[in-house]
Length: 191
Figure 1 (cartoon, rainbow, N blue to C red):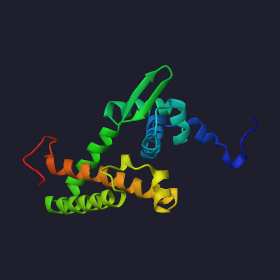
Figure 2: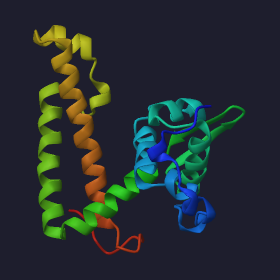
Figure 3: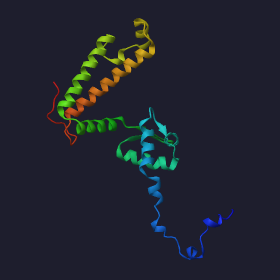
Figure 4: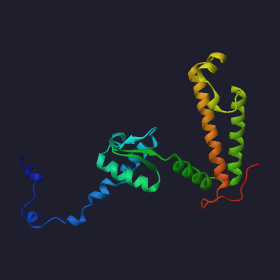
């Protein structure tokens, strides 16, 4: 290995003084920074099916050891669930994410606003049911409906996806209205 350029080398006085290693940032803090955690969190949110530690590490753009550490922490927090041991595979815990979203709704909006959102979502749900002639988006045969209505499969698929999103929104809004801030069921009811 070549010596560093002269201007980068320590002079005689600097060589006598040992560096203060205690003043350096510990490696754990460098690896466990917010950005790394966010990278793994984003990777976990994007999972559609169970994934190995290596696959999650690749999605996050970090090493397998860091992935193991964060996945273990996420599992303790309830964000992911370990599906298999060998190889270790994880999936996102959708119930945790739903709970978190309900808490965000409760914190951001008062009951009147939540009720208004719910009424709009229920109206949209009823409109979709009328448009497709079925009670549930799962009952829509996308290709057949596209052919019957002379619309593209993609257009029908987008509308069915929007309907499913509306149904999820209704569920979250109802939970937000029925849950007290401590997570217990309250006296709130939606007529």
